[in-house]
Length: 64
Image 1: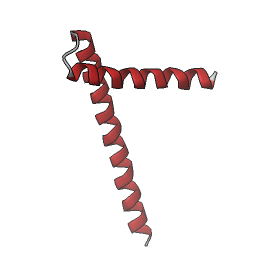
Image 2: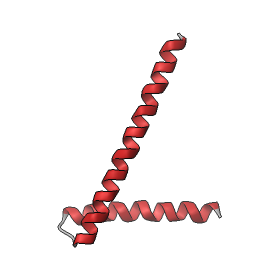
Image 3: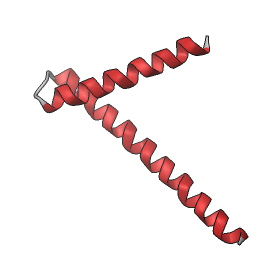
Image 4: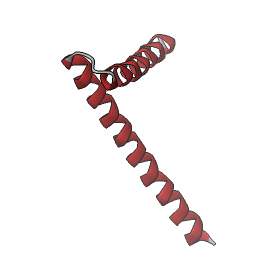
């Protein structure tokens, strides 16, 4: 079951990347929408990861 879920996530990620490239070349409207959603999701993931890194650095400096 886990393999099926991870495979589905992988297909969505690859599909989103394909849509970003296709939209950059002037694809149809639905491709531009999917590309925008993909880029937004990447930005959210990047910001949540940077927040976690800053908390880790703060914790490591506090314990020193």
